[in-house]
Image (cartoon, rainbow, N blue to C red; front, side):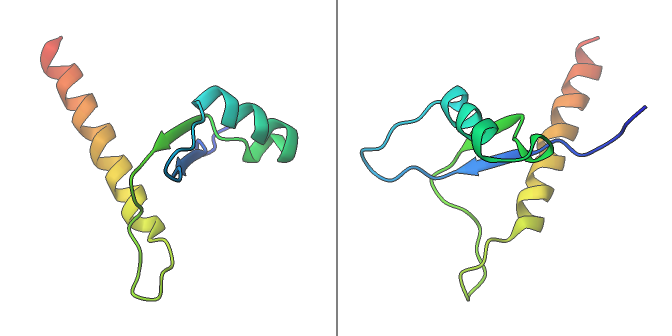
Length: 79
């Protein structure tokens, strides 16, 4: 069995721009190595950043873990 993290892209669209998840994934398939192509794309209004302007990836990862745990808990309660 092969275990690896799923690649998720967080996308900020400029005002007036449009793109679908499928369009972005198709573009990535043509431009990136297979293991780098995202399986999921999340559209956001902004990204958490440091004072210098770097993206706080750990904050995004923590948000993802929280969402996943919440959905797993909700699923367990409903069954």
